[in-house]
Image (cartoon, rainbow, N blue to C red):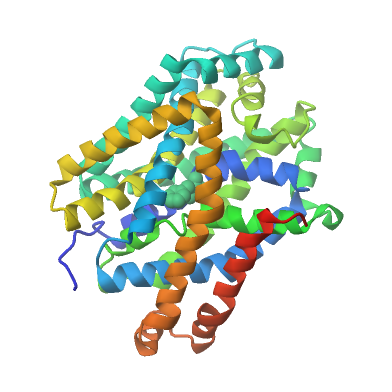
Length: 410
Ligand code: PHE
């Protein structure tokens, strides 16, 4: 059934909303430390190939389903996007916290040791952690409640270009530091000897997460596309923006890390422990811009996660938009609160969604397009019989292989 649905209010807003969903903590927080842990430029190269060969066709599948049905997604996606929204809000909350701290000059003159202690203190403080998470979730709810065009579309078309400009400025700033050359080399000189099977799987998993695949965000957004807007256009630009943004964040972060003489493989703590100290050494404005970038990037993704569940409740349970947003806000606050207090639960939610639910979702979307939808209909969207074959045969097999790799040691 093709329902009457809202739209983003224009092609630019539509592409910015999709790019906004894709560009997020995955690019700024996860990508640089994965590059650091998996050997620099070689990993980036594999990552780009994964995006183009595997993730882009999956993107097309999700978008084709959304656009053709003009409807919300399946139950599996509702569960995965709800779980991601909850633990994502904890990290979003840290970005609110760090933005406020940088506005009051909180990192000025801090040593690495003090920064580490500060982050440990924040993660251990229930009140601070939960209240910042609630602020983040509240901001997400405010944008979504304003609607697809006046909330999500407007927010995306204004904030995503600003986000790109701010990240570019940070990258120029870092690359011009003394001692930055080693960091730049690290990002452009591939070292294939450090590439393991696990690194390839990590690159693929990261490209899924980064492009928001398998949880219905792209499907739901595509259901708001206008008839004349093209799925391949949206997919191509989203992959382009997301990849460029991830690489630019690498250039904002790695040269600064090397210039400060720090190990690039610092892991997830890089953004919240190492960088505040490095950036605050460059003047008060740099950390403010950096945490503002993280906050906007995180918000543009979390709204796409909330929208998945809200759109389902509005269509299927006939709730008003306001009521649906309120209900999901409360439920996500509970699970997010639990994730903020129990780091193990946070880890489990992250692992189960990225390694299991997203893969299952992506597989389901591919099989639906490759095997359930009439061939002619699919071709009317992608116009390439070769790509159709890839979607039908190669991608499902690849998803299964990728999904199994983390469970074996290779
Ligand atoms: N793509 C987002 C990021 O890179 C995360 C996300 C995953 C958002 C799934 C929506 C759906 O941070």
